[in-house]
Image (cartoon, rainbow, N blue to C red; front, side, top):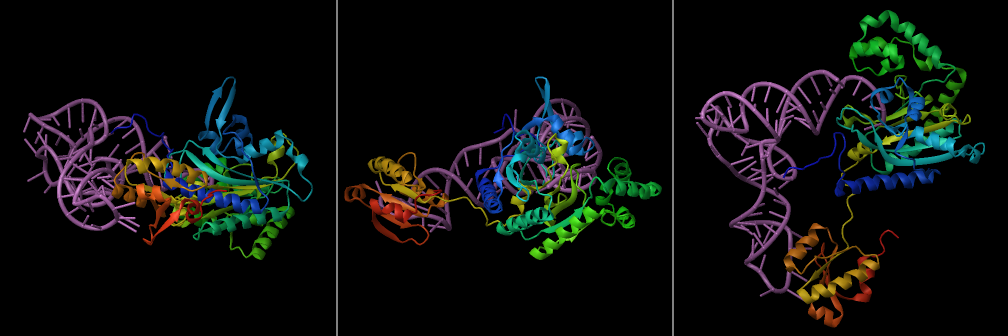
Length: 422
RNA sequence: GUGAGUGUAGCUCAGUCGGUAGAGCUCCAGACUGUGGAUCUGGCUGUCGUGGGUUCGAAUCCCACCACUCACCCCA
């Protein structure tokens, strides 16, 4: 059979078995994040194009060549390539800064799809999903460290063991221009010894030369000035306090002056968590501080810190025994047409009591029903035949142990473990 | 945007020198009319990615296109 239509390039279907794993991850994120005071925020998938050109940055790859933009009426809109800008926009639009008391920032998290028009490869789709969180109104280093600590707990909770935390500071409006200048001055006379990509980076976004993958370039760049040596006093102090707090938490990390993020709004702290099992796209998550973003979007000077996790990447790293689909509680095996009819009402009563029930859509041979019960991973088979209906006692078989007992209907719900999800 | 690899059944894959389509798994039925997983027997499913070319004849050779995969780039 040839499908008449298929999923567009870079998008894919998450089928039920895998969706169960997504739900597991999302549930763990909500549970952990809410312990730290984060509440969910939901923002639109489409935003004014200007939101991203202003925040993410005109010169970034995301804005220059990866956005799904189109005109709707007279305005240009864009499918969001990330959500931090949306959260900041909503924050300004609803004057949420008025709810912030000094020392008590607003914390929000989101889960949803993002869109970037890139060439798909391992760990990279055109529609992908992020779990992210933002903490707005805290300039203190504890906001950075505590949020990173929360992420570490979250990764623990879902069993991600192969991970490395790297942190850096990219300075702020006071010290970054100076560093940038020093770096460009250092690069100028060495351009002909660098690869083509690095020569382009030197022009467009000099800090990015540090994550070049060419070995010769990396060696040469060891001699380049590093941002950590040129931080201003405020940025240095902030970074050192973040590191001290991570030490106090006992979270292992590597300070790496080569970590540079691709979005213009980052200042001071930036960080990533890397894994070796992801192929070339090695980042599970990334984030940092953006103290100027809210103001850039027309709001008051409210500092921010946040991160985004790649959901697909996370799910692919999770141990295979996590987040398996829930099985059925009971399969109603009916013997003969009259019993099958009677089982319809029985199934309704059990479901109303919160039991997960499966049964066939028509009377079927018993062998076929029991095979099906195995397939849907039912814990019990409930036998319904004429003698059971007459006596009001049903045969209940534990499909794992093979033990069978006779149970009255009023005792069934307790035996089957009803009230799921309540 | 650049480069390389791969497209055969629902899934994983064989298919020799160009000779007319195969296995395992899954699914369905039966063995087995009130007790499943195992086993055995039988059965269903293909525009061989698409279009063109060469040839008596193409899954196989050639060209183009499409999709997927991996890498560059970039990022989650």
